[in-house]
Length: 87
Image (cartoon, rainbow, N blue to C red):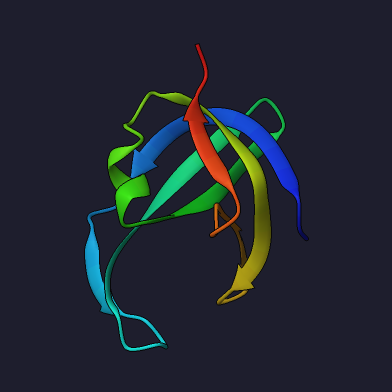
């Protein structure tokens, strides 16, 4: 699913992992749980987006996309998406 816009609260963030992407670039990745009144979804955070959120923050994801990873749905901000705090 593409062009996903969602708003929710960050309930948890996993420890940051260092990985090498398919293109061979070293990167950092963490997984957050984003929840609203309808439920929760895993939110994949890459590099600078990891520092953009903290547990308890309300955030808005614009132009994100959803994938299935290991049988579980995950929300991704991606190259063309944006994550921003909700005030």
